[in-house]
Length: 532
Image 1 (cartoon, rainbow, N blue to C red):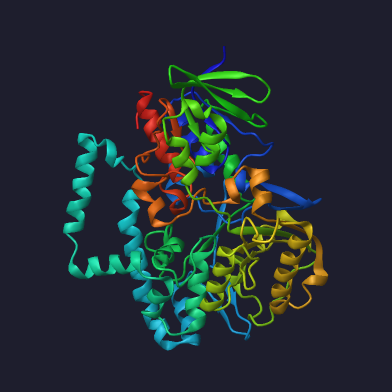
Image 2: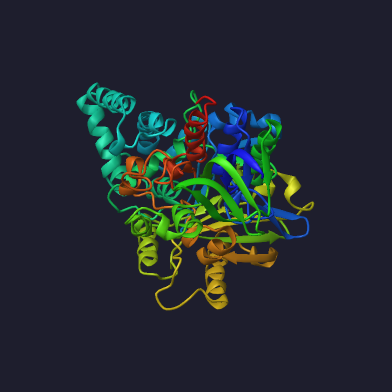
């Protein structure tokens, strides 16, 4: 009978992160991935022979530097390139580039507004303060308030003490950051519409809130989450993994194997084996059974409990609560192979910020309209578009002189109000996006060698993300922190003994990629007597 200390269902970044931490702690861990490639939404593919690109994700790296360092991922082949933060392009010919260097970035802001150049220092300081206040809750598992232990009570009291130490001004700033709309908070700092639209597009891409929605201001912190201490005072960098985002997954897998663990591809788990209401093993699609002391699921909450367990074996009312967990796709993906590098005439030739991609978000009002369309189940008329050309930074991704363009299209509903996503509807969306790109890059349409469009239902079918939701659960305040994924189910433990959730449906979700995996691994390692 095959047996391991721990089994992880799913080889996405959180599952592999959990596996790498467990293997380093001396746990005999096995990762089981249903697909032929690792990484889940971070997987790559060839759109044409020799044209390699991320299939589902934009292609940037969001794994925190802390995790990269602790797991020594550069030792296992990971190479990350920090580049400038991209360029926002607008219909009237205005552009706004984001530079990592503080002096250069303030000069760029001054080109648009002297007032905004002065305001940048204060805005950046306030975002970093917000991140610092949040960071402690991202790097430690949250205790379930409904099952408080003495150590959990001490933790809550410690948080209360830290809150009491803050000045009235600091409490005011925290309250504004977590309650105001993105538009209202930006209005309090900046006057240039281009500056505000650029920051809003960076913050809201992939979220289910528009810039006018209350509480959307908190997303402005997201780009600053992993900015290194002592950065020069410029805009947040774009981080590009050389070899594509699957390079992160491959480095994590190499770390697992180097420390005695194992990773199996094309090994789909269909059932969790229960004995005496405890998780004891897993059954694979090929009929194989593998037993273990602990199981961690890197599948989203709904896939985990509604697909892997007989519903009758779950606690009364639990299936209904899982069903109420909100998962909604919001992003489509368009992959393009190009015969030549696109040109953007409104941007100075050789602008280094183009390495970080381009954003076509339009005004705050247009972003809000796109979000309204998404809520109404309508293909967005003014979608928020992010386009990255990773082959500009990594020439191994395309043949000499050719390029790949990775395009994320936001506020795209998973279900249309008037019918399914047909091939014709997908072509209409792709044509709209290419037309928007062509407004800024004349001739790009003629340079397209191949194009593929994936809408949320495609992503759900191929990757296994319910509703094509990359966040694995809406990141609204009622589904965050102690309530992620739901009240009474914080801290990675589940109602099934020996069974844990380590996917993005668990805390901290999208706030820190790899965070759920790291947190769950610490809990499981301690439970197995292997340290924290």
